[in-house]
Image 1 (cartoon, rainbow, N blue to C red):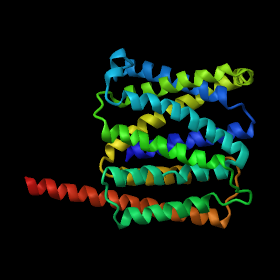
Image 2: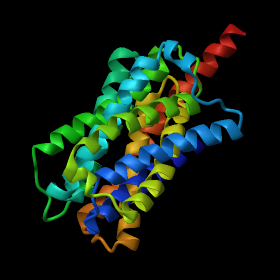
Image 3: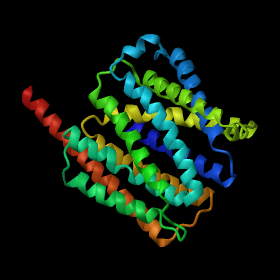
Length: 299
């Protein structure tokens, strides 16, 4: 549960930082690029300090390396899409597309990994979608085609991370996996410097924002990977609780510190979101209790 809460906290801070960047009309590409460079250095430095291991050439032969490396490109593309969607369609619309994407990793977990879709998880899916709609309720909420790309990209990121955990017998720990992903993202992001208009966006403010984003982003992935491990066999419920928890925390912080309005629909959305988390967590408890019974029966 601790990793779930820490994942929610870090992921929420990412969204809030993106919101602030949009309000300041800050250039997006250099911030995202510095963010991944910071993540790479952080993973190598802390991995060495804590004895968690760092990048090695031998990691190329790991069963999960190909997927981990390709995830870097997906990370860069999704981050840039989220930032662009926030500018074009507004923060509320971008948040809606991002969080509705939870149906992709949840669906993959149920179909490919035969995770149970009992009444609790089924109810959690319905309540999650309803709560996201209510929490994102604003007068200027509108649709832009780019939101569909955000929806797909965000869902594939979560599904890919779960696939690494479920389908590949990787010998890399969470720190090493994160380093491969962020190193790949930094390499793919470096291609952006081929565009002269993106190079012109570089300044000291972008460097500072990128470092701050990188610090948060690195731990968000580490906690997400460890949370998936802790919820092994119930990752669909984990995604439901994680995404809705992010939206609840983000909505409350935006209301308290960014003075975003909370109309009656959004307050109702918070209540529905809490019920969705309760339904998802009920599924987790049910599966854990079943596993305990099976273990005792075998003993």
